[in-house]
Length: 201
Image (cartoon, rainbow, N blue to C red; front, side, top):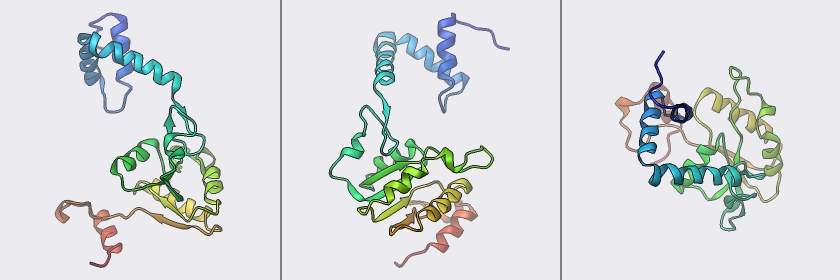
């Protein structure tokens, strides 16, 4: 067991930082030391920003995104296509799609994917709200932007069945060779998906 090398306040900071994704104990210790060294420039403003975020950030009651307003900025943006709903598992997926600038529809965050191993069942996801939104006559297409994992694809099939009675087109993201990818470095599953989903040239 490692001994504490700093006071309890700093050790607590290290322990909390270590809970963040991508930060292990060593990285957390380095980050904490950097914050302590840069108290005026980083630690103070970071603490203030976190306090403000804790008070003001809410979950959007329409799509499930996080913002400082409800509905969120994406849901109230009049330039977005009301006929298109992009379904994602998590907020990080929504943010990734927004960074790409590839889609201008509305979003729906499920809050996860179906997983027998993790005990995540349909009632744990925002599926009823999705069906209600997809039932709007304005909605023409639902894009299932879910990960190409077993759980992601199981969830996609489940949603497809849920929406089967509605007059909406249900599509999913293409799977296959990434831009700039070399065939020799791709796994068998990716190559097989690319062959199955080949398109005209």
